[in-house]
Length: 403
Image (tube, rainbow, N blue to C red; front, top):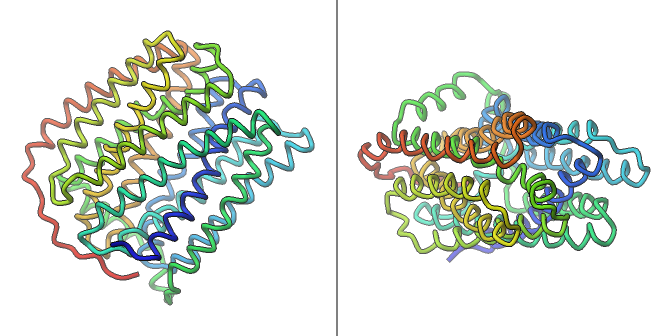
């Protein structure tokens, strides 16, 4: 049985993510309506995700050593100002593509610094044996928001336009910040505790990088992020240019992706927490690559929601299982760094994949670019998984400490 703190955190996170996904539907469509090229769509995704390469390890140290209440409140508040500024720009008819991309960069920087603190909350408020279940439940709210957010965006885009989506996104930060202040007790931090020293940072990364059991999980999500993640980044281009759809079709497709993610997260609730999840991770990562190939070859819009639902399911099972494996194997002292390295693999892979795919989409078109990505993903996962699955399974021996 999970505590009231977990339930309140789950609900606040759901509201926040609904607003985020409403913006995720509105923003690329707004860029397309402003005449942005496929390369600029990829650049916007890169700007939002690329800061993880430089800052997420720093965020991991902050999660381990600083007062997480202050970290989350400060950076989430800065993030909230970005959609508010877009609302002002839209109401005044002054928005330009470069402004949208610049604000995405601000969101990316603050996200990289605060997300390790956010991701380390669940293992801190549940019992050790409940980590995998807690993370799976947390994944259900994230994927439920992927259904509700795009559905809300479709209504708002048809009614008041993109400005409504950005307004909802800004408002959705408030309940999460309030709940984070309540759920996380203040933690006194000495200057030594908050200092981001390279010794702690690189020692933690070195421990993870030298361990083939953990390295395999990170490599798998890095590959899927880089080569399969662009499926969602360039979904608006696929819908508008290849399938001649509109924003309602796009929101339906993204919502279907969320349905699949939710089904995957629910399915993980029935997986034995003590089970070795490596084969599960590898199989669903390969399936994600196959689905990208099928999506690139698909000529019918009616099949796109089904394919994206399967893609969402595959990504949810792969990433949530990899996150569970990493966090359950980490010591409490390195949990923040472990989370940040996981984020680096997922978000960093997506950022590079979005930028490189922006180039290939501009040169080859959206279908050939996605086809190439899917083939590379399947081949790479098949190659690297063979060695990873030969590594002996790892017993988990590190209990979760308090906040």
